[in-house]
Length: 91
Image 1 (tube, helix red, strand yellow):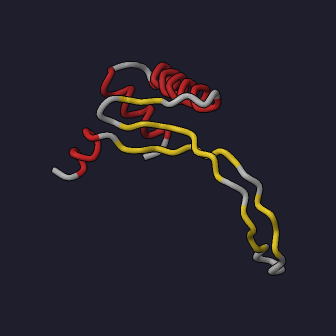
Image 2: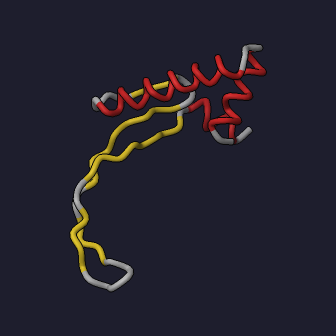
Image 3: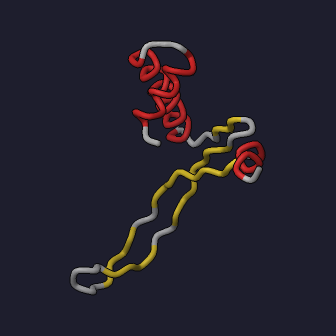
């Protein structure tokens, strides 16, 4: 399922126009992204939690020429499934 599929499902289930559904999906995604950018944790009950993790720098290798390179530290998004989501997958 991609963003377009999600929008279509929302439009059908909520009985609203696809344009309106797309706006709602975009608002939710933008809100989650803004919170993570600020370093906040986003928890959606029974679905899961979005957080930001700091990856440390490390030495890697350039696959083209085999030379060693320094990969800088960076922040990455992390999702942890909630109890409700885990249970729904295993019923």
